[in-house]
Image (cartoon, rainbow, N blue to C red):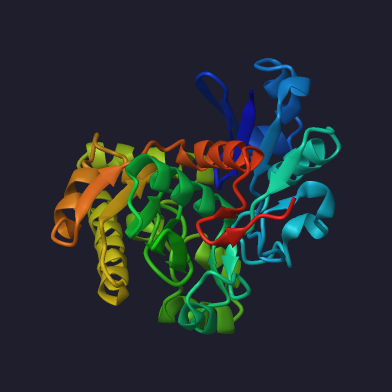
Length: 330
């Protein structure tokens, strides 16, 4: 049996092939948007396409659907609009189109938004959007890895999104534009709102420069931002240290806030390329120390998005009809 999961991320599109073992690979967004890479060709190099029993994928905000659906049921790729979603390159759209026309049995995972039934009604009332679809996959991987029914999962990379799971269901989440900083994205503060009102920048431009890069003064490609930040840190640049420290503080605030409204937490999972980082800046260890009083803290691999998607495909193929409170349509 072979199952494939896809994570439509900020810097690239990641895949996990789950058979007897797990194999991971990632294609950069710029390669895809320039037509220099094909997701199906990369898959074919690793597994015959006709041997894939089921694939589960994520795409953009996933805000036009609220159930896990076969891709042939989905209209407009499961999104209301691509606006407000950070830098748009078209690479993910090319992958979606390839998979849609491939004939591979494929499910689309929804994002978390105001029409997601499993979310607490207060979250749905407060925020229109909570998390993009790969965060569901990340949570499912964390759920299977830890066995915790009540937990907080914080995915920390280009952006930071933190989810609250109670009794095995996702009940709340803080999206990147309203909560903690990531490397690239972050919440819009008063200065940014004024720039938007004055016509100096668009909201999306502000959102895409509201993370650690804002503090460090970094202006570079999304794919290079994390490396440049760490290079500055290694060079002893104080603005890079402050950027990482401030980013971590906002994430700790977010985790403590979700813990404060929970009915109890078994554990906290930190993941993502920064959440799992130990060198050259021990982000994981420092953040763990800031939240360890809440509950046990563990780390999952940065591939948890595509791995969780593959695990969703496997478990739905084997009869599961609900994923963390999200209904499955087959």
